[in-house]
Image 1 (cartoon, helix red, strand yellow):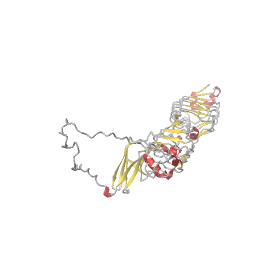
Image 2 (cartoon, rainbow, N blue to C red):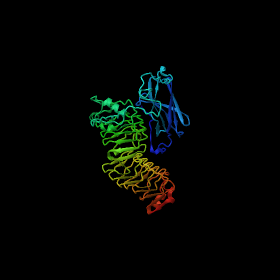
Image 3 (cartoon, helix red, strand yellow):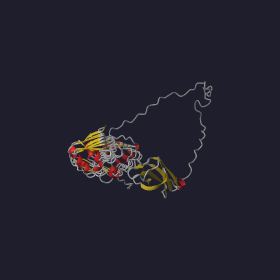
Image 4 (cartoon, rainbow, N blue to C red):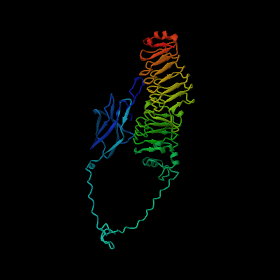
Length: 496
């Protein structure tokens, strides 16, 4: 089911992620006969344009969307009729502003048959104890002078030491699952010899995960998936809306994470990128708002991932500001390997821990939004041979302070440094002939721009703000001051 397609264009200057999307404080339902009234409470009033409603279905892999209108400033409701009796329904509330969307936890309720809709029976009164033979110490027993007198010693039965229960030793041939729910489903689907357990050999022989239909999505972990070493694909929508799943480990053999594979796994906090992974498809990690850690088998694999052309930012595992880990260590300073000749689109999108990057001379192109919203990124070193850059590469990198662009660069593309609010100083080399109209838009801290070329590059009136001093070669000052769209900055153009 297609749900709330989101589009993103860095040139539209969108609000910061989640700036206008409230969280859910509660989601409730009231069942009556064959209908249910749904209500979602928000923690604050939404800002701007948005859509909201509920996803409802008898199967968490196929839930239908019911849009709602706001009933008051912080809540919305919907009533759904003609529901089937003796049926359990699953429920998720959502709200979206077109760029960011928030989902509630998964809930469920049941529609009962009419004859089941009765009041709960009262607890039966405690039955009277049947009369029977008296036991020692319970009455006038021979040898007991006054059993009711606390000063009279009792004659209890001798203590018999309890024998400790013997634990069945774990069989090294069988997988020990942490979560019983996923264990039961794996055994039901893949226990070939029907011995009531899943061996490592049985797991390693599984080539298609879809042979196990997930009937109960309330499991919390599935790290044992790493033993399914013949799998190559996580099927489409396979783990979608497993809202309690917080931990999973993919086998290194996985080459593709299919569309919506982990969509709305709202508790998932960590994912690994297997060494053979090639593709992460549409909306694979959409709604995974708790995802804060991405573990890499190799940096080369991560930089080679293809997210496709259909809403790729919604498929990216770093979308919500996760950190990268390589061999268990957090990556803060990255030197791009010599084997990498292209930084693909969205490569480090929203990577919150990245502080410095070094790009070698063999890189032919840096893709669009490659370092978009890397809020901790302070330093970028460009080799002088890099010449090709796409749009929005350093969009909203709010910790960048100084940039020296490469000598081979001939154009500064659209929004390359837009919203880099801490950027103070930029050096633009002599081969640059054009600077995009919003390349430095909302760079409120930018005070000094050095241009080494004698010929002014083409700009537009709003390329630079009015508080920047431009340093140009001494013998080129007059050329800059009189060039189209440079003349408005004439009194701030100085020679060096």
